[in-house]
Image 1 (cartoon, rainbow, N blue to C red):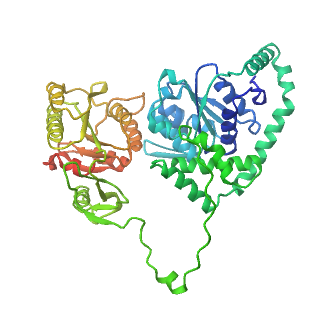
Image 2: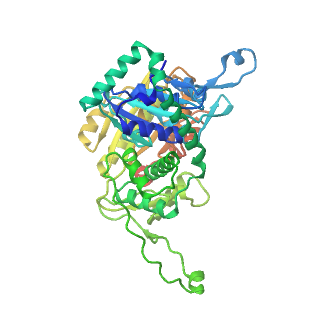
Image 3: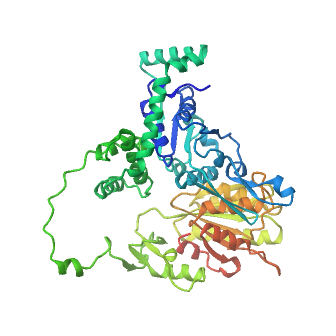
Length: 526
């Protein structure tokens, strides 16, 4: 029997965030605070405000990918009718999925979860089968920052973030204790006291959900949101989307049209570390309309005209950029040649990184399994890494994988001598824990880090008890667009798995034996 949501004392910002997420489930919520601040109580209480029968699914720590997303239905497989069955995400459809201590959940699972929250649909591909299932639920996650921080990339993916502190007002504390004791002594009687308040919340939530599809933001308001967020130096569109969604949900909850006051009200939930913005200035007088021929024939130039340039200066660099302001043609053509394309596409385009701007970091992930082949891969990796450190200002890190796991043997560094000492004696041989390597790599990737994976793709060690190759592919899909895969497969009967990994990542693909210029990798921006 759950504590009533209407009986929670204080914590206005937390309660507001939860009600907005219940109005629009695309708004995921992260609650951060010490133990005893009512995070779990509030999450469980929210489920009772949803339509009758709405599930509350508590995601246990240690849950694997198959349990969360779904996998092969063993009963049907054993009966000769192989099929897939969905996981916990499907069970949470229409209700609440709650994750306590989300900072302890595997990062790639958190990523996959947040993808489903935004789309409302779960997709599963295993053993040649595919399954799509509805998964529209309110995602609530909580954590105690004292027990470990969430990676910035994952923290930013939560739409609403609330710092939940203990009650400081003595009267509120006394009232909270009084209500908790009354609930523990007589749960049914306590719940009866708040029945009307609970019912009023349910009806208001139902009305807000019904109003939400008809709530829209004006183009001017959207432009103002984006202008304010861009002024903070934030490149991602996630804050813009979260502000727009949260303002719509608040408007639906209050039965209003969306205006700037509502954006200001939700700003601390979306960007808690940024000061709330002042109201926008009044609109400028409408200029006199241009003559018809000017409106028809005036050229539409991009905000920043495209310039064709080559990187110049000791720290100038060409990096991948699908919307380049300064096109680095040589690097773009090299990228096209390496992927063996027929024409230049956006995925090939590079921009010239201005002198003084932070250069990309390079993370080499090298397959050290096997014997003679592993030694060749390691020799290539050592040579590439040392040459990059000698000739460029880039930071380089190295992950190797063999036997039962993966290890970051060289943290990101520009120290050539430290790298030489680390690389002097690196073991090789054993089995191929590819999925473990990709999971470890995901923990070190960010906006300025590029991944280069050197492997034959022949995974044969499970990461979380599933199929080794299926696990590796699933993790590869989380690295889309930030990687290159160098195929080290040799022999008369190639499986082509390295190419499949590259396709799953949306990455550059090349055969290791075809590369004789290690610095080429950096010029390609990977």
